[in-house]
Image (cartoon, rainbow, N blue to C red):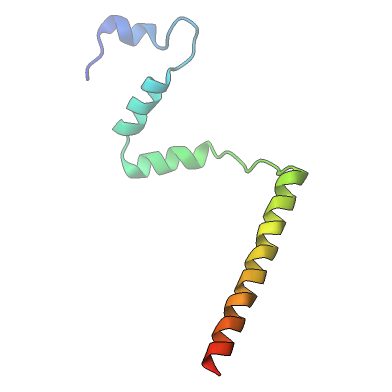
Length: 80
């Protein structure tokens, strides 16, 4: 896809923002190593979790441990 001289001089649209389609085009044109390098330079850190999210994740961990215990118990009783 070649850009005309006018399009190259103009750059992003009049508002100065790059559209999602433009970003998708650039990402599709990059080699895998170039894409990895670009992602490493613009690292986005993890966002902090809210109390509700922390509670939910801990509840899921406890549920997982409980379920694991039930499975181990069932296997143990069948094996006896």
